[in-house]
Image (cartoon, rainbow, N blue to C red; front, side, top):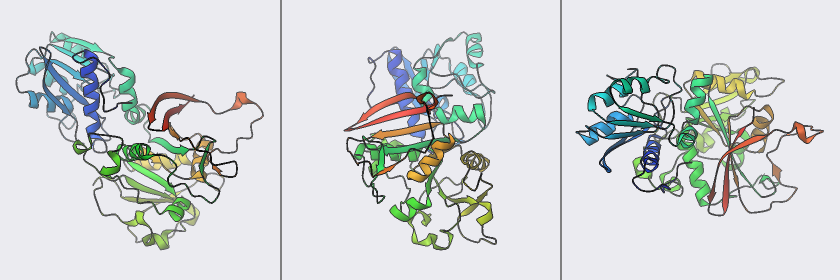
Length: 388
């Protein structure tokens, strides 16, 4: 994952590309369904301009960097994603902008999964006499673009489950108490995920037990991300999983019903999802109801993700408790698992996030692929994806 410290030798191609990836993070929470993109312009080894895609419908990273640089003739452009070659909401494509600016070389980290641009920029740039290199820091870029790649390849909402777990795989004491299992940097990472994803989901049990606000706070985010002042904070859409819609009549008692603050104007602020046979008629409250058909009397998370996708939600962060986590894992309806291991023991009588799988052989176990890891003070973050 992209960190605040650039690990590459100053002035190298990798150094400047990493800087582009760092800049891309400044668009967190504001650009979806577009991707996070950063761009750096360098001439004679000196930085002359940099930019990032800051808001949906706003200038793309390349255009912002070119505007910051002024004269960019002969410069090298480092872009975290293949420049677009279609117009869309912009007056001209980024590929055209780079050609017209007279850059001499373009390096990009990852091929655009959008079929409108995929693989086209290289040919157009080379035809204009510009040197092109792709794939520099591709693994880092792929991880940063995870939800966007999934959206384009699957046309569905990207789901990430975030868990904090003890050494013995427990997420709360037997009475449900879990605050705070992980450390301050891990809390900062949780708010990074809230800022990154369009929506955040918790179950009714978590709401009753913890009364979470589900906001994104700059002071907490700063524990993980130093460059917080360049990020325009907003709160994710709140999704309450309440199978029988039992909390509707008492929502005002809970913090998640406070819809003040900054939300994306093009997204619902609060969604209450449950089984359609329990959905009330004539609902007049501030929350949008999402009745689901379910399966065998339980929430179907793939159905939920599909319905959220229809409402413009491109990515969902699940912060539910043991029951929600076990159901999601049991259905295999997630694309990513962010697991924070903290060095404490809670004991065998504490709550586990693992669903009953009824396995008779280790060969039948659910398996995950480690795509990244990081130390967060005494905690260890493991970022995993299910093996297909």
